[in-house]
Amino acid sequence: MSAALIDGKSFAAGLRARVAALVQPFHAQTGRTPGLAVVLVGEDPASAVYVRAKGKATREAGMESIEHKLPDTTSQEELLALVDKLNADPTVDGILVQLPLPGHLDAEEVLLRIDPGKDVDGFHPVNAGRLATGLPGFVPCTPLGCLMLLEDLHGDLSGMDAVVVGRSNIVGKPMAALLTAKSCTVTVAHSRTRNLPHYLKHADIVVAAVGRANFVKGDWIKPGATVIDVGINRVDGRLVGDVDFDSAASVAGAITPVPGGVGPMTIACLLRNTLVAAYRHEE
Ligand code: GUN
Image (tube, rainbow, N blue to C red):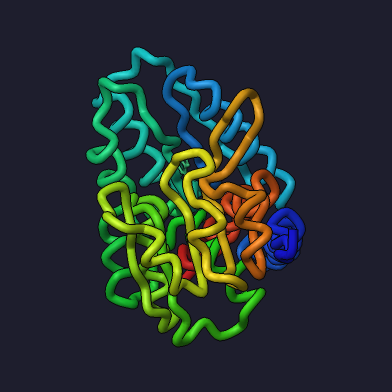
């Protein structure tokens, strides 16, 4: 392995500490504590793990975690009514509805119902539009975390060639918008891209977010490139990314491990977005 490891775990710990250090002055200034409401519907075990981790991190940062666990049988109307209640609650600064929702629920309608000013996930079309047009808003936590790691490593990203593999609303599209805003030349590749190695050959930055284990191979990557692996896939009981780590690490200049790379940044950025939301609610 010749690539430097990008230590997202330690960067995330630093960010969480910086957020926590700002909660006390916020409280002194406003007399209240920032609050994050997390809504979990159903019994998906992976979602339950994520929600528990989000609640714990929120409390550790000195913020209030308001957790709503609803049964699988929850109706669309009941879920929308809860979102309405959280929108109207002045102690709630951020609202996160954990995805995926059970199949009988319409996630799009639920996300549209969240007050864009409390949308700390950055999934509301108003926030997606704000990102696309360069207006301030909430940026989805995972791509925001990836950008922080890239800027920490490179400083100015201007003029760099970036390939984002994946075009999801949660990662690929906002990642491409963020890198474009930082003056990268951005290519968005996806499952229908005909010749992915052709595009990766020129990429100074690769962000892999396709949800396929070990999909991006080392010999597709430009020597010295920075590789950010967003994937979390379970293979034979082991967590692996969307990048074939061993082959990529022998070619790349720097690479995020899985786990311990991008993953911890997502929760840290959620806390950061919640604190920003709380300050905006005081304006
Ligand atoms: N499911 C997987 N990742 C996320 C996330 O970042 N936010 C929400 N709400 N659900 C998710």
